[in-house]
Length: 302
Image (tube, rainbow, N blue to C red; front, side, top):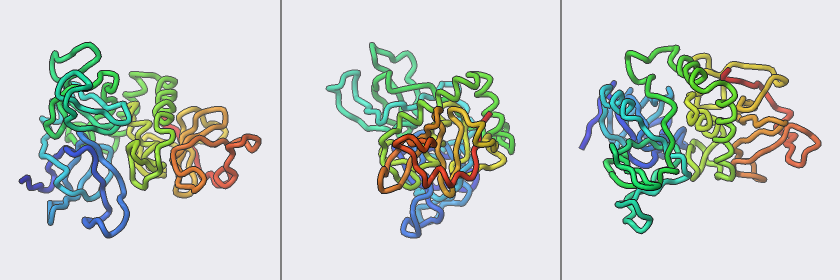
C-alpha cells in the first residue's frame, strides 16, 4: 500500500475521482474531478486515507489516496516524450484484443490520458497503456494527442507565468482562429451532458468544468472556477468584443460564447439541467433574460 508525503508527485489511476475542500466526504459537496492519467503534487501528507493535492492546472483539494499511484518528475517527462494520448470519445472501452468481441477490461471517460504502446497498431485499433496498468486495445478514433502539459508540477517549468506561457505556446502552434473554433467544438461535444457540481466528464459536468475542459482539450489551462484570476490566461474584455470561444461570466456561473449571439453552458436550471445552448438575443426562443441581465464580465485567452 502506497503512503504519500508532502511534495511527492502522483498520478490518478482510477477512471475518475473527486476532490473535496476538506478530508471528509460528508463535509460538503465535491469541488472538482480529476481523471485517469492526470498528474498532481501532494501538498498535505496522507492521513486517514486522504491527501491534500495541487493539480497540474493549479487547483487544490483533498483526495482519497486509493485513487493515486506514486510518480516523480522523470516519469512525467518520460510520459511527455512518449506522447500522451487524450480520450476524445465520451467513454472509451479498452479491450483485451483488437476486436469488439474481445474481453472488456475497463472504460475511461473523455479527457483521460493514456500512453501508446510502441508499434502496436492494427487497422482502426491502437494498443495503449492506462495509468492503472491496464494494457489493451482501443478504437484509434477515440484518441487525440494531449495538448496541455504538466509544466506546473515540474520545478524547471513551474512558476507564476506557467499557464500564461502555455497559452502563448498553444497560440503559436495553432493560431487564434483554430483555437477558438476548437474550444467551441469541444464544448458542443458535451451538449446534453447532465449538470453535476464539480464534474468534468460526460457523466456529469458543471459550468466551469465545461469551460475548463473545452480549453484544456486545445492546450490552454484556464482557472477551474467561474472567475478571472491574474495568473491564468483569461483577461477581461467588453461584452461588445466577444468572439467564438470567449467566456461570459455571471454571478457564480460561466458560459462559452459560440458566436452569432449564442453561448453554451452547463446549467442547473430546472428547465434545462444539462449542457445547453442559449442566446443573448431577446428575439430568439432560447433567450434567457435572467442570465442576459446579469453578465458581470467577459474574458478571452487572446
